[in-house]
Amino acid sequence: MFKIGKFGKSLIWQTVIKLLATALGLYTTRWLVSHTLSQEYNSYLVAIDFCQIILTIIELGIPKIVQKFYTNPHKQEEIANFWSTFSWLRIFSYFFGIVLIGISYKFSSVENLGLILAIFSLQFILLADLAFRSICDAKGHTWQFSLTDFGNRLILVFGLIFYDLFKVDFNALNYFLIFTLISYTVGIFADTIWQKPFYSFGDFDFEILKKYLKPIFYLGLSGFTVALYLQTRKIILNSFGVQENLVNGFGNAEKIFSLATIVPGLTMPMIASLVKKRLDTGVLSEFGAWLKKKMDWTTTKSIIVEWLSYTLILSLVLTLGMIIFGPLVIWLVDAGGKYQSAYSTLPILSLGMLPFTTVIFLANLIVFLGGEKYELYGTSILAVIGLGLYFALIPQYGIYGASWATVIVFFIDLLLKLYFITKVLPKPKINIYRE
Image (cartoon, rainbow, N blue to C red; front, side):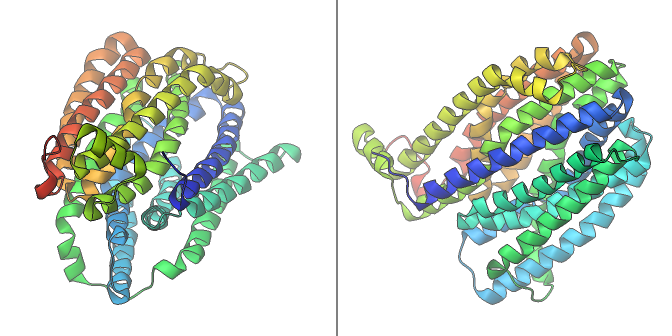
């Protein structure tokens, strides 16, 4: 009933490559855990969260806007002007982010401003690189982006092995940051070359910015509200005086969860582009056609239900994988057992994977269907609920309160996305329950 075509093969290849890159990422986490002191590692983890908040402010929804742009056909001149305009906007956003850090870093609970600026700059390279990821997702060859990601992680691993092999007399964390800079730079340079057939430079066009002003506002602000409930947990835990070792263990459990989200995070944007095109053209797969005939559904409902079914299956597989293999992964990154709380918080966080894949799929599809404002509505609601849960549960239950609050937020997010998708489906097909 279901055949693996060109799209499916690309999806499989990119997932395999990304999983290999993830394995290398586990080594880098293990290296950091074993080469840094508890306080130093805590500062590193919290600085990452703080920088993520700043990055979501300056992200401006550009990756999704780029993918949405490339999902639809455009003339070469339009592509050139679009690419140049958003490239300049991205450059400006970096300096705006530096200003925001200077104003607000005291609230991060990390006193080392240099560490924050270094991590922010590294993460900004990854943020800028996402524009090329968006092209790959829209064109259906995300495996290319995955391959360059694997390459730069390989460079980092070689650098860390060199540190141990030759017993380099240099602060381990600073060395890690330097080699991370080298690897990220190589990665984005490779992407600029590989994706050159799909972009060019033209004129900076204020009319383009004006055209995308609403999506920039909605997506940029929604990204910030997401950070308020996803990137503040360790900062809040620190502010309530939770022990560093417990927070670090919770941080390692979060890392395992983040590793599991790589698969849906990689595949769902690409799938959402495909589903958007199928909704536009009314093209059904064999399974979708079977659903339509068997259930007497509309084309729109058949397409939506088909792909929601796939995301649910993937969510179940990933959740079981985290529960079964998560403890082994924790042992791999922390063989010395420095941060034991990771073992007790991971099973709770694993439950959050159940709605996660569907949430990512629907979030992208809603944007591609022009529902940027609904992303803002949803994330604003979640920010209020999430922060309320953190401040209600963390003082009494610490890392376990943070874990359960996270799971609850993900399930509420799923309910909101299911509601919003009904608002953005094409008008002639918006009633997906009857002809």
